[in-house]
Image (cartoon, rainbow, N blue to C red; front, side, top):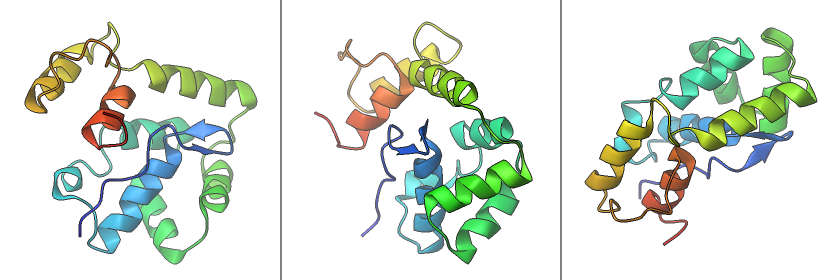
Length: 139
């Protein structure tokens, strides 16, 4: 059975989203990732995350497939890209938790909500909130 990835809110060394990106990589390699996630691997928030860490996505994929837990892989990113300070992680978390709320992604969020039958849900104001409802973790 195909799966959705972990919640974007799950933290790795305090950083949200990273565990979700790694989970998508692992699920895809095992042919267990739900089909609608496959076309966007390495783009969207994945791209923003690796760009923030200053690592190459394909290099990250290769490293993930060699094994290791999320913390070890994030430390590898710090060593091969840039190490994030507590402030950097705070900025990332704040930014990502607000994407879709009155910004350039708001139109995409509205379209995705409509496609998912969630257009009447005014309580879903960010992409991360949308993921929680669309992927069945909240109702």
